[in-house]
Amino acid sequence: MLRPILLLVLSSWTLLVLPACTGSGNLPPQEGDNVGECSDGLDNDSDGLVDCEETLCASVCGDDDDAADDDDAADDDDAANDDDATDDDDATDDDDAADDDDAVDDDDASDDDDAADDDDASDDDDAVDDDDATDDDDAVDDDDAADDDDAVDDDDAVDDDDAADDDDVADDDDAVDDDDAADDDDATPPPVDSDGDGWAVADGDCDDSDSDTYPGASELCDGADNDCDGAVPADEFDGDGDGAPACDDCDDVDAASYPGAPELCDGLDNDCDGAAGGDEIDGDGDGSLACADCDDADGTSFPGAPEACDGLDNDCDGVVPADEADVDGDAAAPCGGDCDDNEATTFPGAPELCDGLDNDCSGFPGLGEFDVDGDAFLACAECDDADAAIFPGAAEVCDGVDEDCDGLIDEGFDADGDGYSPCLDDCDDTEASVYPGAIELCDGLDNDCDAATDEGFDADGDGDTTCSGDCDDTDPATGATTAPPVADAGIDQTIALDTDCQLDQYGNDICPACPVFVFAMDGAATADVDGNPIGYQWTGALSPSGAMQWVDPTAGDAELQVTLAAPALTGDTVQGFVLVTLTASDCGGSSTDQVLVAATCTGI
Image (cartoon, rainbow, N blue to C red; front, side, top):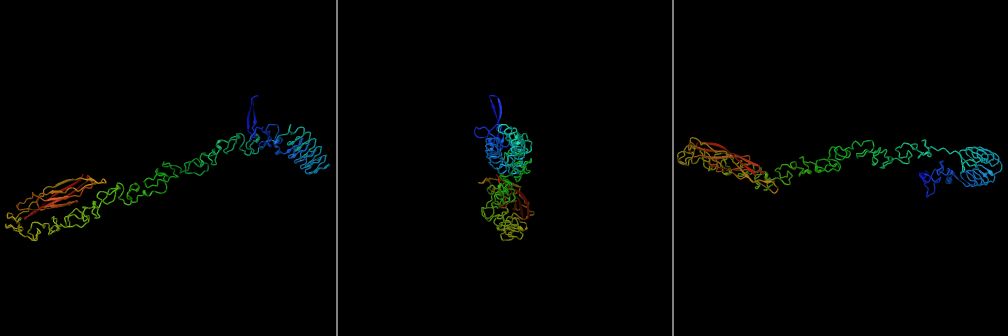
């Protein structure tokens, strides 16, 4: 390739532009060093010779080695003057198109060596005059359009070698004024513009096969040097290898982005239409595009997100973890600490129930949720967990014990409420005046349960019987009565006690039962206008729960004992109330009075 170089000749301060040589070594450049130089009509090595006149162009233009002047297109080595198109070596002059070596003169188109005269269109070798349209070798004058070699004057447009004057525009080698190696005046062929852009190679067109390429042309986005300045603009290269040059690519560092590319889920304008895909936005700001996010309205859900205990598919793998399901509907899942997701009463913070379960998920059941006596009832649900015969629903036994844990003792056995049950020797549990030690009344009943009826109505011999009003038939001083005594049970009473609660090994309160509440009932204010002895009977019922016991309920100063259940926690209070009834009686009848006693137990 020829490249212009600058040479500064210091002796004359003249700046010359010489062609650069791409040949080897330090040899000067010669015409024919580069392809195309033997047919471009230019003097490429500035030696005055053009194209086929150069030695290096012989392999392209032909080869002739005669000692005079010949212009055949092949190879001839005669010593005179011959211009055939093949090869002839005669010693005179012949221009046939094949091969002839006679010693006279012949220019036939085949091979003839006669000395006569022929003007045929194929073979003639005479020395006279012939103007056929193929080959003639006379010595006079001929102007055929093929090949002539006369010695006078010819002006055909092909090839002539006369010794006078010729004006053809192709190739002539006469010895006067033509195209020999010294001086020639023929017309150089006009430069060729193959692509019709108004510029030929000789004019500087760097690609004469492309009409968009010529000196000064506008650069197009086609990867070519359109303006022939020797450089392709930087933006016409494909930097990312996606087939689109930078001038047509909206992102030439990303091979996935070019005009017509499929849109990817990457937030980029892959197809270079000026906008990313419609779903390539991050609506919830979690760093994941909607096209890849399973819930673009939830910032905690995106591919690879850590699973949260919220019942959602946070990591977008299509599956909600099993431990995020709330099977029992208690608003707590296993991942959130639900220790039994099949039991709706069990979850973190749930109130402890008396069910033997760890309701609050603290790691152990609540206080009292144990069955010490093995009666299938937890201590928190029964009144005596040390006795397997005592539990809610147990059969009540007439033994002074609350077997069924309903707060009542021997209920169902003291039907008349006189404080005595059949199990405690009440001989008539339908009559409140009949019980062991009761005053025998003149009523046809065995009031005192001694197996005798109305006995001793005048035991004291005072003439008055109990049936007639002797209220004390053991005392002769007590006779008949005219009016019943007026009962006076005293005043209302309240007793408040504390119980000292302790923490067990799990940090739960354990509160023992309060001490027995003892109420001293005083009926001393009961009066009898007759002065007869008065009979006393104390009765009552405890509510809402607990146990009560009378000591000497027939005395004027009876004792009431009340037992309450233990408080559940420190600061809890349990209460029991007894409406106490005092019945005062003598021979003249009876009257009643009531007082309220209250027992309060607080855990501290």
